[in-house]
Image 1 (cartoon, one colour):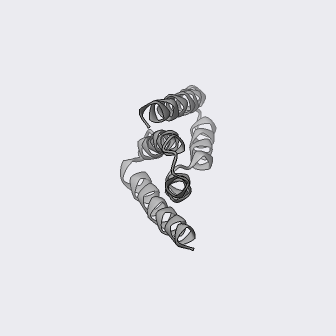
Image 2: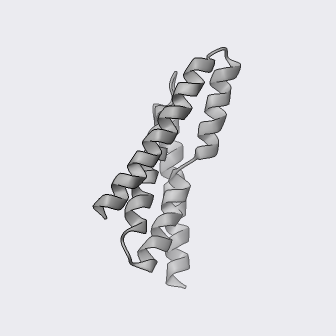
Length: 110
């Protein structure tokens, strides 16, 4: 019961942080979404290596809510539709490669 409640609370907080970051940092380049996805990838790596199942379940709720890979895909599509296909590809490549590296680094430091 407590794990489920902790999961819901961290997910709600994570979603609020993601929305605030997007509102304040996304402009010509979606820095807010990029930062949230990379940070969430790092946290997911660190949490998966923590070994405590309670921490993993609760933490992943917040991490999943902070990250928004669907928003990243939509932002790339918006860039491409706006005639900025090269920026869309760069954004996707940077987001995916940085996310993978951050997750690996989090796992190594756990």
